[in-house]
Amino acid sequence: MSQNIERSIRDLREMDALSSGNSAIHTVSAGAKLLVTVVYILTVVSFDKYRVSGLLFMIFYPAVLFAVSGIPVSTCLYKLRFVLPLALAVGIFNPILDRQPAFSIGSFTVTAGMISMLTLMMKGVFSLMASFLLVATTRIEALCGALRKIHVPSMFVTLLLLTYRYAAVLAEEANVMTQAYSLRAPGQKGIHYSAWGSFLGQLLLRSMDRAEELYSSMLLRGYHGEFYYAQGRKSSASDFLYAVLWCALFVAARCLNLTQILGSAVMR
Image 1 (tube, rainbow, N blue to C red):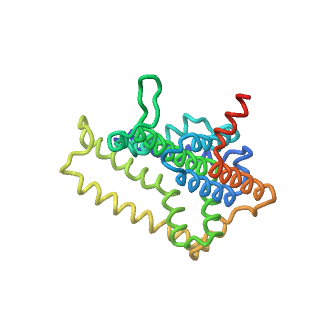
Image 2: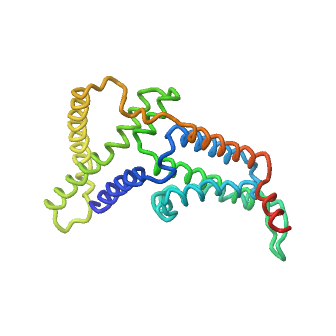
Image 3: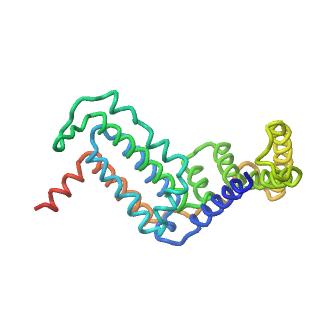
């Protein structure tokens, strides 16, 4: 159990390290990246459930960001290892519920349910990748600053920032308690169910004490409900161009079948 907590702490710190990179994508303003990500996800989910070829073009956006940012695809897959199976499980019963034949490949008949299942899987995976790339290339303070600029309530932004920033603190408290328990119960695997109540109670009390200390230190540093240091840099003309070009490409991909158009051009 202690190893799992330490792994979680390490994952959080690795995300901070990824967002502190200096690639061309990292230098784009948080507001531009947030806008592009939102438009991308809305475009992806708006595709018809049978339009696989048109949706296939949307892999272009995460592919470019992975290449330019220098973040390995394997890192994304590892970080999303718990939610990707859920995304892939969406629509898994479609082939059973929708057996209408769509086309045949030799003796194998592809049904409409198979196509819709594949489309739903692609939508889930693409959306998760875009969200991961946003967090992996943008510091949480800059992202929260961008959310405040579009008038997301301050309370929500504050909760998001503190939850992300101090999740590792809570994990460290749990790790200390777990190690202390294992020293008092050598050879025992995990925490006995009879101690679950007291363990969670102690963790809650320790977390509340730590939260009071953190809040007091924030007040001493002039906190009054707004993180003014989290506003981030001002958007430039290149940021505006970045957002406009990507959004225009997404709209074009939604209105036109760019995969088919590119395929026809290559085959000529």
